Image (cartoon, rainbow, N blue to C red; front, top):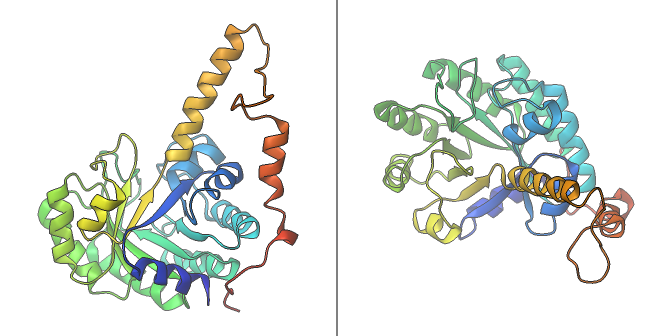
Length: 288
């Protein structure tokens, strides 16, 4: 079975499939102990790799290189990659999709935003003409072999959300995402518009969408939930706290002995040793 098929089967199974947003190899190492699926978040990658907001700075070779490192360390995890608008040009989008499939990505998300792009939960988003986006999406779908493709719209006007969701559901995309959904009622409405097509919901702390449990999402007919930033924001909070405590303690490091709960060199090394490739046997194949 290929990575795309494995994720497609997971999405088709009962319940809502969670994919956890990771932003670097260390966050992925921690997340891998709790969940079997990653979301390679554009928000997190822009923050960690460039130290910049998610407004279009990501260059596709950087994202592809990151995905390749992830797959080498985590051969058994689902890996859905955010490729923004396909890096503007349709031919570039197709090239990136083929590169990602060859290195073992499970799927990609392709959005309909116009440059300058924004985080899906930010104000000021603009979208491409629908025909222009559908042409790009069609080329991407033709260029993949088994990769799962999520068609995403960032429309904000109610009538346009409905029109685009219906149009995306008519394509050969595997899953539909309307980003920045503001209410449970709108999730229900989108679910009705797209028929039997699998639906993805994006949750981000402090974003525009309601905070919902997996059980609640399953009841609403949501097939996939991506959590863009739990690792990034938790790391932000934990680092800020740790450094404030270090300053308060006049530079004395915390005691990691016993059951203190603190992480030291031993715990960190043990976590990272699990990623050494010779310890892995990949259960799926990558298309030649």
